[in-house]
Length: 187
Image 1 (cartoon, one colour):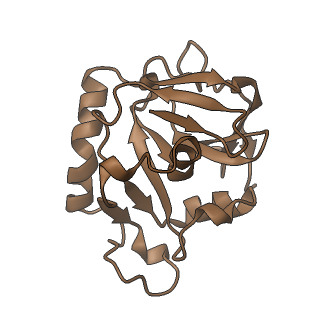
Image 2: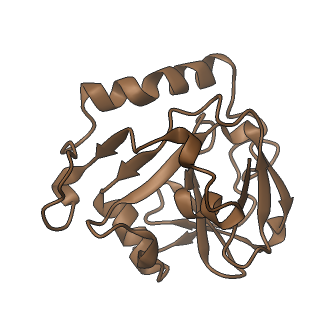
């Protein structure tokens, strides 16, 4: 499976996909919405303010080209590391150092292959509905609940046990230092 930015300058390959993913997820939190508005990419949000991501293990994402154009953003100095392609401002991945989670934006999959997500079926979990816009016609839990946790916890636990955060190409060999100096978007 491959991912790509809008213009095709950034390309990456996913190993062991879709074997090691909990599937399609959507987040409606204020942070995800604020990030996409701050980088002028609110077009990636659905009509209710949700951003769809598909998690993979950071060590299973291999950058093929465009690594030098990656930009790192954080809403605050303690927030998620959010990566976009500097060439065309495509949001790509949300991650944290040392954590077995790289949430790849659905558009990065569709840029590489418009039908790529069909094999994963429908969105399995929608969270942080308290921040959703309007009245969505589907269920969104207000925050992380037990059912939502059951969707992702086996993935995270397996990632922790097998050290799947190791080898992330978004961080230096120490596993903590981002390869691009983060830009803090909100004071």
